[in-house]
Amino acid sequence: MKSYGSFTWPRRGRGKPPVPGAVSFAVMTPTLLDLPPAEARTRIAAWVAARGLPAYRAAQIERRLWTNPVGSWSEAAELPAGLRQALEQEWPLPRLTVASLETSADGTRKFLWRLADGEAVESVLIPSGARRTLCISSQAGCALGCVFCATGRMGFRRNLTPAEITGQVREIILRDPADRPTNIVFMGMGEPLLNWPAVDVALTILNDAEGFGIGARHITVSTVGILPGMEALRARPEQFRLAISLHAPRAEDRLGLMPIEKKYALNRVLAEAKRFGRRVTFEYVMIAGKNDRDEDADRLARLAQPLGAHVNLLPLHPGGAPGLLPSSGNRMRAFAGRLQSAGVEAVIRRSRGLDINAACGQLYVEMEKKRRPAAAARAG
Image 1: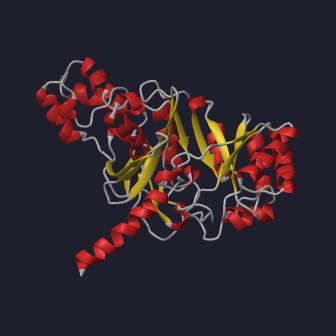
Image 2 (image 1 turned 90 degrees about the vertical axis):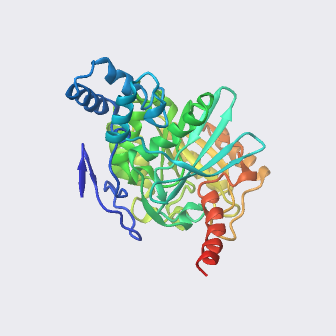
Image 3 (image 1 turned 30 degrees about the horizontal axis):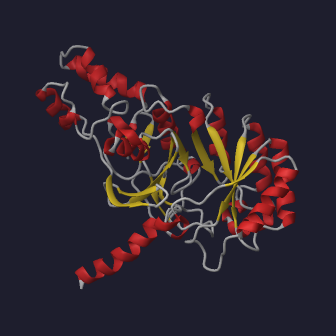
């Protein structure tokens, strides 16, 4: 194992779901981009001093990590050529490469990023007026097997490193600074709170003024209800937002959609949400005949009321278990109306990027369908 800062970097293990709190990264050399800005600053300052360079060089170097990033040190024209060469050798900047980019008619863009070891993850950039929300991944694949989610069909591949998580933001900025995200949601591939050590650092990088400087209230962590991770997020002083993937108001119905219910029961998840001390959001994918009845709305209202929770009602995207159908528009409006009549703030979220497989995991699954026959043909 490699130890770096506060992290342990074990060898990856396929086929086994992650244990809450455990870290399973790919084998790779950690970089400055894996460190919280304060620690990166300390290491850079020591590195600069050891070479007898002026102290101001450290600030110039740090700024190029996140505040005004460069794709490689050779692009940092304010630094002497010799220093740029030394940085490339000592502290190379890892990159994510675009395996696929699709643009929707509504302006949504979906990126499939290829990682250094060949794994791939997705992120989605959603423009809305002056707001640019980037949905990012925290794992390659997912072990949770929610029946309506395309990522669940992949199984768990591995956890992402802090640099790979925040690299999704960094690459967007490198492509076009005008697209710099204003909001971040951990709602891409994987369960963020099953990769808490890396997500913890990523949150700091995203929020820190010397990192990407995104306000904590503009960063949302979505979870199915991993209790140790929820407790760890609650312990942080920043006002990060919490979204809970609920999807059914009764434990027995939720278990049929989300196997994690067996380990972290709905009543325990809601109790922890109440201790969170800040307003939470319930994410609720509406599936015809499964969770969209009037009685479901009434039960959901009773869960949301004590927490003052906001409810996002989401149309089911294709790509999960066969046979699942989205609730009709009329059913969704009636469902939202019952919640609102009970004093619960409920919003029907418009589907974005339906024409580009923008739901979590869809683009990866489609790309893999194309890759496998091509790889077999090459091998044959």
